[in-house]
Image 1 (cartoon, rainbow, N blue to C red):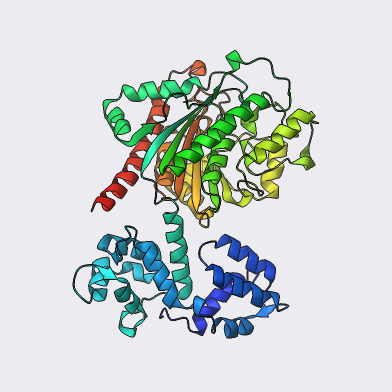
Image 2 (cartoon, rainbow, N blue to C red):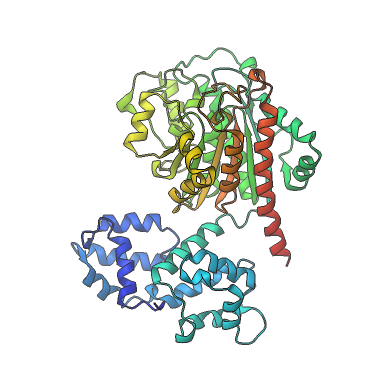
Length: 500
């Protein structure tokens, strides 16, 4: 199969838009695909397609092929030029062996079995060991054709666009959000210092941390503690006014960290402020589609209208998804709570919700209420259970997460320590039996954080005051070490490639 867009190739492109497979494409289907393929179809190409579709009732395959064959933007010549620019990560104007290897590995077809060195030699007409754009375009010639389709190349471009979303990140910053007001039991904020102290007592980890992580300077740690805050006057969203202030500062900090080309590791107290982490990512990348991997014993998708406790650490995803869940309402929040809740749902600064339900996946959730169950069922939000992690393996579970988020540009991974089984971890506000073992959590996080789209990682709900088993420091340290090792590999290899 050649990569020239003959009728069979344009048919595969048509199939992308015919979502329901009924043999006709509609404006609604086109919009759904164009939105999910942001950055893949050129703006001019998308505009022309919209105009064509809007001028028809339903567009058949034959009508589409006639139109598409006359559109230069759908041809492979420009597509190959776009691919060249994306693969040329160092902007040198030529492709190195490493850059060509990346392209071959991402292609994911029979061509991926070709040795990248062999391909380089085939294209390298002047013998200088690098591929110019003109040499790259010889892939259009008969003797250099790749065994892939136009759709394969479109998917390759999408993968490269996703990778480029985080390509500018050059280091790691530690972002601390010291707030325990969202939890039912105080003390989660103390987990931040406990973890940092434990790192300092591990010589190799301290060395790795010092060489990789830039700590945010003192005075920039959003904080609020139950011990110094008065009684809440908003029972359906306890301490929402104070927490909203912390979230505003935290969102600003995450946003500025990303804008400074640094990867934020967020050490948080309770899980309520995860909503501000998501908001900060969206502020820094307003045009990017964000996926969320939520590793937790709880779904955390209550609202003030449905919460049985009023604790805001059970609400961050309802904030991020713009979800009130009024159909399951059991509370009538006061006007102050309603306004502050609405403000928090707009914390990311965009009219639409910060994330879509379809771009969320859970791991380890096993303790939910009826209102949350209704939301998960209504929006078909997947949950990978502890049993599935154990039966299929943590690596396969991670791959399922990444596969579910195949179309997003960026990924945020958050880990609540209550995802761990309560027999090994008591040092958290809401321990639940039936959770992950430590080695499963480590394997899961290693695989997830190695994905180049992951732009932020958060650890939360570490409460040393509740650590009856005295295992919390060791467990959290092991998880932190695993994540740090992956990030060190990601960013040290990137630095090496730039240096070369």
